[in-house]
Image 1 (cartoon, rainbow, N blue to C red):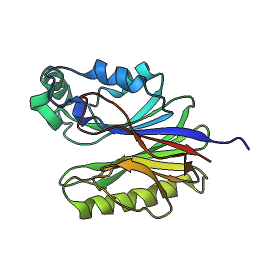
Image 2 (image 1 turned 135 degrees about the horizontal axis):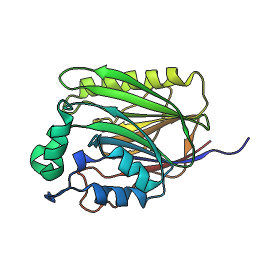
Image 3 (image 1 turned 120 degrees about the vertical axis):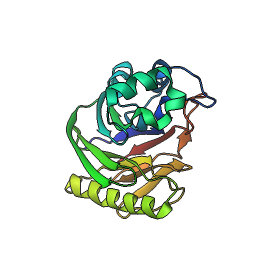
Image 4 (image 1 turned 90 degrees about the horizontal axis):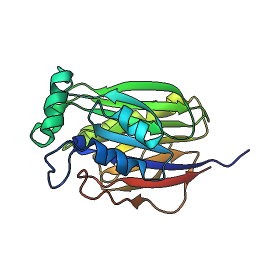
Length: 225
């Protein structure tokens, strides 16, 4: 059987904003930065909902997204957030996105983990290679809720795989330390983590240089199985 090698990136895009504030639409900058890194699978959180198609096109990837919260009247939110991203902040709407290079996406699933006070979703894709990959953005400023969401996400992801040998779950868990049953912690930085089942990390996690983009460092983990 051929050896599996997978470079996994997780990054919270901070609703398309920079630190310090840039005062302009940063889609071209985020797209160029993301496309320049050597990843196979990108798990993205806090993404403006109209961004994933362009991010994927620029990176030569396929994509799927899960709408999260504050997306009512989205056309109006889009106009305002594109013109004034910093004052709009999360009010511009949001989604989580999975981008994949080199293989096709064969299946996409979503699971609502929490409705209030803010919608939280797990979403995952099955790749044509058979690998399952799932993405999560946990509740902020409430470690009990975030831990509950992480545990549910881990169990749901494993149930989706139906015994598949290689599985990845990553994202912004809003927890600095955690363990997930059935998974090995493959690497992380601060609240951003990658977990794997049936795959082992090669070396440690890397944080990538993103300049001033986002308030989260992109985390890269390389896996093999």
